Length: 539
Image (cartoon, rainbow, N blue to C red; front, side, top):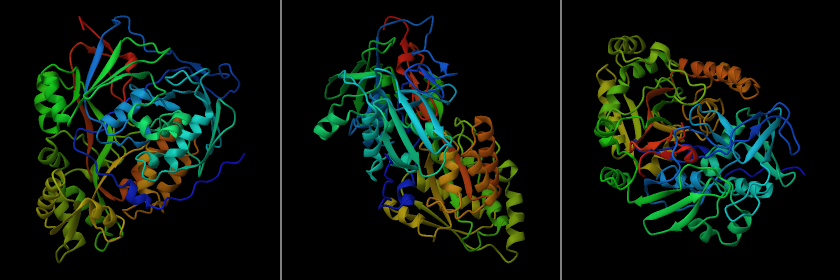
């Protein structure tokens, strides 16, 4: 059986992919991995040469028992396919209740098995995954390859699904047996297993979803380590699913109107963990420590259309980049909580490099003025800065205007409503414009290919760099992870040599937990493993 190539979306990929990076409090989701093994074999036994993984994290000091209370925003849905990155409650619940084929190790950022125990590929374009023997949904029904096909195709076929972006590369999905899934891609992608770690791609039971979609979204039967025990107006109580080894007796999701209310509940000791509002980040760190402040896979930069009039001169683009003091922008608009950024690939993603831009991205007003004078001896032209109006974005744009005008670059601000802004960014009329981006999967590929590869519909900076394209193509077909990451680093340096963006900063997950909460480690995508969490003391 040959998979059918899915039809193209009726909505421009660029309009769907331009992401407004939310304030500092961002996506939290949980991808839980029940690790068995990964290799290149087939059949029912461990694959030849495959590495065995423990089914849980073991801590010799861990105490069994207790209920972990999490403070979250009230989710609009419990259906993983409809989970939005903001509010964070939706991917959080999706990750707790559902597993995907693969997951992420919170410490290393590497891809690990989840519902799939192993996978292999044909030239990185055709992938086969084998489900773990006897794995079931929370109602005891067997998870089959048919459920996997249904789960992925319902996302692929829904252009409005927040997680559809992650599967744009998929040409077709089919069940070869009850335990074997074949996924064909439109082009090779060696990092494809990382795509399937997206917590919104959790596997759902086809029969139950088709029978009652709205009922399923309200009280789903999941495939993850935790299952619903009780649904109340303001608390969702979860317990470990059958066969899952966990230290905790359960997890309570206390639902609030917003993050500020959740953090206020944490301050009153009504919950054990909460995200922190950006405006209270410094205070929270002083009171409770900053161990929960972790890199997140969202970045903020301003794009520069390299083909736009005046901006085609690389000296002028460098002057613009050097004029911007990103740390000061962070202080003015984000309470100083953005992490330093020199390229599009954020810290925490395997393959990240801290010096992608070298010294050319360093703030240097005198050098910026020299470059402006060299490019335009009679005076620089007016640069238009476009952005979606409101809140922090107004503050960032105003700061950029002041910094550019300080080095003799006149600026005109162009704020607009978000819906209008999305269309404008794809119009070809943009010059300098706000561009937030959240990777759909933890790989440099998720940032470099859509945004900077020649011909990509999301390449709104108009960059065309054949050397970078070549390295991206080689990275996508490399079997060696170390070689692949070095190729991505080279491609990123090639991209930044042209300065198509002004790096502003990387967002963090800002969270706090009570001292008795142990083993809760946040990964780059905001996930954590509740089977590794335990509570010290009487609780």
